[in-house]
Structure formats: structure tokens, C-alpha cells
Image 1 (tube, one colour):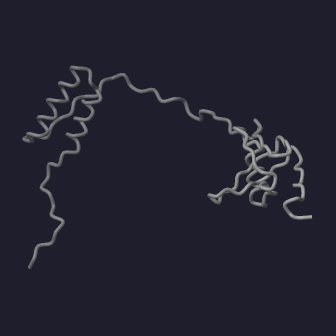
Image 2 (cartoon, helix red, strand yellow):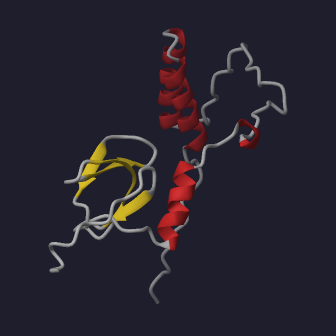
Image 3 (cartoon, one colour):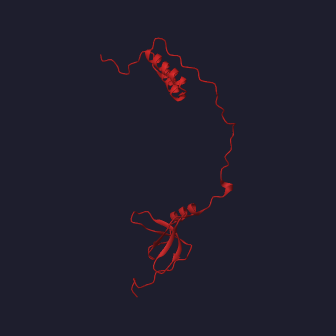
Length: 151
């Protein structure tokens, strides 16, 4: 009897099988139907079923079996981490933030201070905070050179 005339093995329903793909990554699935021409497999974790020739599915390797166990084992409620609040919630102050104080004699800080006061009057507190940060981070000292002088 020729190899092509030999009947393909009948796969048990509910068994997990692997089928190699051209990309090199095997598809894992559970046998859900056998119609004589194709084997129907369900993707792990649900999803659409796919079909393969009877000779395509093979028994999964040990690594693939481990992956199947991970993907098909249900998570029980006792293994979930309970989320609790260890500390009371943070309550933010409703007091307004005082306006920024510009550095004396700095035109950039004075302009940023004016813009901050304008934004506070318009209730744009986000922009006002940006100008306070600009005033705080504006350099007022003499910059130090990072390059050495040539002899």
C-alpha cells in the first residue's frame, strides 16, 4: 500500500495539536471536529476556528504543552491580588497658590510674572503654573563655561 493511500490517523476530539506554519511559528489549537476531509481546530482562549489537512496537525512539543497549559488554565478568584488602599486618599488643597516672585531686575521673569497674573485672572491655572515653573527655572547667575580655554 502506498503512503498516499494510507488513511490519516483519526484525531480525538478535545486533544490539543500543533500545526507548523510557513512563518515558522506553530499554530496551537484544540480539535473540535473531524469531517473526514479536514480537521477543525479551535484557537486557544477562543476565537475563530481554523481547519487543516489531516496530516498537518502534530502532537505538541514539551514547550508547546507548557504554553497550552498556561493559556488554558483558568485563574481562580483566590489567586487574584486584593487591591486595598493602605493609606487614606490624598486631599488636595483648595487654597490658591501664591503668585510667583520674579527676580529683581530680570526682564524675562517680569514678563513671565505678568503672564502668570493674566492667566490666573482668566482661571487658566495650568498656564499660570507653567509660568511659575518658568520663573523658578530661569537662570539668574552667570553661566559657567564647560569648555577649557586654549593655552
